[in-house]
Length: 181
Image (cartoon, rainbow, N blue to C red):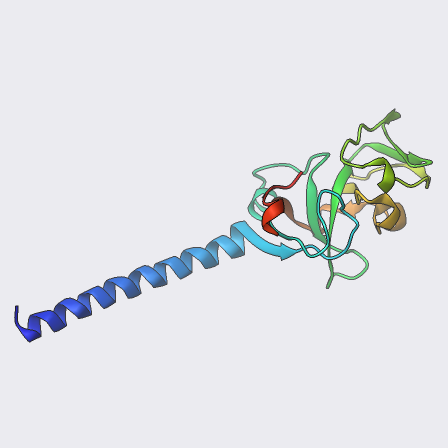
């Protein structure tokens, strides 16, 4: 093989690698912008399901395009209504039209106690909040670590427009690797 042929062959290989690299970067950008986004959990309000400094992926696609509805039990990421520069993560407790109240730490939805296996006894508090009917396009959200959570008990129902993702997967630290509980 001549030197010229070797040069053209090396150039072709470099072009193929460049094409594949650019395509991979474009796919990664699309996935991160529209589908999944890595975020860092800051704070203890969602313990034990999510812990401070844990890294998770959120699905931004599922709610944005109406693929799925926000449902009770979903762990959602949203812009805090009091300061839209801050993101919060909480669990959906009440759906539009639900009557929600908290009676000395027991959450009642439509008059029935909510089964909350994800909230250990040590993380419960004894606070109460008055019964309220959740308006259309709003959700009642609570942190799992009730005694350290700033949530709908303090600032009211969350409007749907503030929700931008659903927490789906923990990727760091390795010992907590797996789906969000």
